[in-house]
Image (cartoon, rainbow, N blue to C red; front, side, top):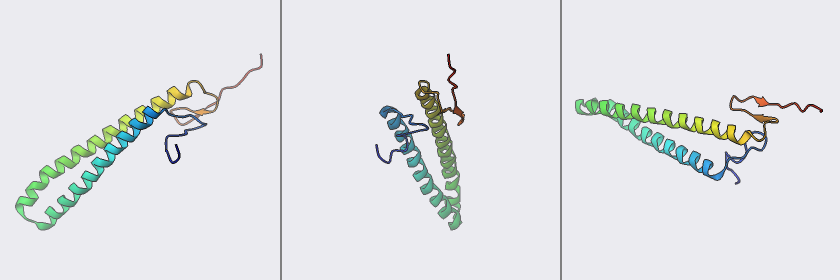
Length: 114
């Protein structure tokens, strides 16, 4: 797949289509939450600038929602990171010669004559 950020990793390690779809779905969720956060921040700023007591009071709930969304984004990225690490570990088990491990270091296997 051209332009696919997950098509090739390390020394030719490939992720299967289902894994790529899972990553894309989670990245889409993150992007949706970040878009919502942008709208919340704009509304919070407008309320703050208005100095109207009711609007300032409304900001309490908006800020709570923003904080909750940020926690969701952190959790999604954590899940993505764990899934990505597991998929790399699984896909590189068969090819440990020069492949990148989950710690980012190359796993070099020495071939001994014998």
